[in-house]
Length: 244
Ligand code: PGA
Image 1: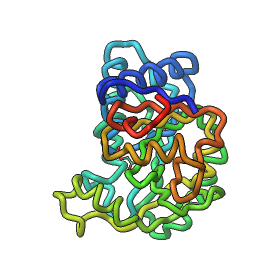
Image 2: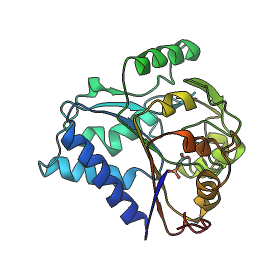
Image 3: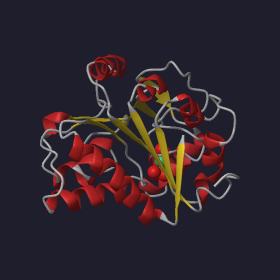
Image 4: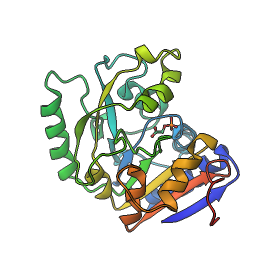
């Protein structure tokens, strides 16, 4: 694992942009694994600016997203379909047919998971972007998720529901209680992993991911077994690391 510590959120976004833009420039038909949540928004803003300035071309880029809520309509502003359109896809020259988000609205969610696994098996993710949950989750792989998991339905952890209530008028009752997520095995199959962490509420998760022994209790720690992981964190998220 390569750990890059920068000052603040703005610098996390700038460094992540540098790394992702280099990949897109070198491999215009790359496949990106993308993430939702508050953390990647700064990076997405920079990708949009670069596309508008003619510096980055997304016309051949393919994307696969990590996860989607089950049980809210796609048209809900907090569905991850809407999130991706609003924060990235609507503002860049990507072909929407090349963008993929799990089908959380499917009448049979298990069939939709199987379909998503088939899609993932047909692609190689060149770079998988990840945030990290305060409990160490990656995508919606909550503590205890087996390392050989593929896209599956999950019941969200109490802490995740609490953390995500900020997107739902701070009302935990409005947060969907289940989701569809790529599994750890799908994430580990990516050629490169880029994990971003910002803020003191991520400090324990970052410490457990980087310096503690890998355990499924902290899903991100399993990334220690991946050959090409870069973690970019700000000083607050890195504050518990002993080896900076
Ligand atoms: P956040 O979420 O970027 O909104 O902090 C990260 C995550 O839960 O994976």
